[in-house]
Image (cartoon, rainbow, N blue to C red; front, side, top):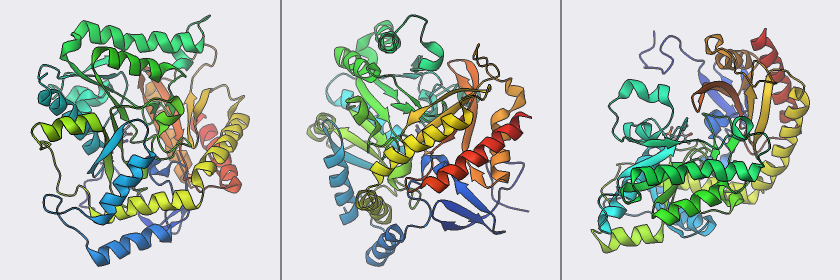
Length: 440
Ligand code: PMP
């Protein structure tokens, strides 16, 4: 009998006992190749001594000092690193402990910014259908994942939702990719006009959608158009890079590839790489200046923000990524993994689409390739794939959800940045067998 309130309330998962590179070993000695980094978290695998030693050294020096009283060295250094690397005018870093906390802070910053500059009526938030931005009530309220939200109505924020950028399903015959990107981006323009631009605070989106859509990148030009629309209406642009950021796509920030910088950018997962819980909001200097020159106090804070050991971990993770040239490995192995998935599943009649960037790849399962008809949700295909994969010692991240109101099953493959060709072979073999077994 366990007293832990596990999220799977009807079963207790295996006990993770030891980390060994890209593998997790459970208490019975069974090995699992972590081909999803948990949920795109463990970008360095599970046993990098350089990160562990950096955390130990920080614990020896000063384990905790409340940020209401002190700053600390790893926090200052990690902020310097992030600002140097970040696109646009993201010059200030607000540390938190995870993705949902980061999204909450970004939403409140947007609201406070408009209060400080004398536009208190700008409070509306627009996000995209089928998006996930976290599980705390504010973040849940803006997400467009209807089945997650419905039981918690009335929600804290009455957000509006526009279409996600979902080329596989939504590009029309005869329409170019570029024309499609413009058409879908222009839904945001229409939504802002319908709400009244003077009431809209921010638009939130993931540059590459993670969990809810299986590594779905925006088409080229879409995010640029979104940036222009936000600027035209004075609306802040918030990128949620909690999952796709910190190197996952082969760039430290996913939006770099699109050449677009937001006003607020939320990161978490890969920032601490699972060695410590940490997240951050990167903030445009203009927003920071409005708060500094106005009230001088941001109405938000958490006990563990800027935790020295978490920041030391974040800094060490970035040093490892730089020293081992891991962003190059993400690009090279990402391309190899994608080719291997395409050759294993290219002719599978139940695989509709293989997509993604870097080591952030997704497979969309369909009951019929020609019509793109999804599987009957009652079949719970994603759960079966997860179960079959775990049985074979493989962690992938299948999700069944609705995209824009339509059911779908997706498998997210997001292994650590340190994988080599033998891991790629093992992932594809085991995933192939798991999908075959789940389909029978
Ligand atoms: N935003 C996105 C895009 C996410 O994928 C997640 C977590 N899956 C979150 C926010 C919430 O992060 P956390 O679970 O760390 O609160």
